[in-house]
Length: 192
Image (tube, rainbow, N blue to C red; front, side, top):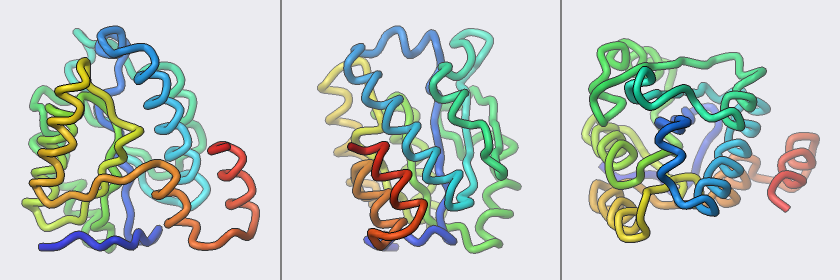
């Protein structure tokens, strides 16, 4: 059960995990800013390339809604699924079973993962996706934890689970595959 190094837009799903207001307050400010910026770039790439987006919120009554920067970037996403959850893994959510089957039936078996926290919800979701046979790319500069130690531990664990650790620029340029066209021009402006 290996993960392809090549991302193909027609096979991808973007998963944004639990980037919520009250949880965000506990993150290092500079790391949170970087994560939100990069998740926004991933969302713009998904919008331009018609990649489905799954957005989860962990117990929103307690942790609040998705932060405004991410919420605003969701505008224009045609294939958007929002999931509320109590389990740490998105895949344990009741609604995910049908969603996962629908996406897999459409050939969407590559998951690009961003969000928080790296060592808990991101790791457990990536692990479950791998166990289900999906290819998983966790975007290191689009995930965050409260501490550097837990961030590093989370990335190590996702690699041990068979996911690839990547970066925003690597992901979007792999999806674009060439330095040409309107999508390239728009996305390259965002990553400068």
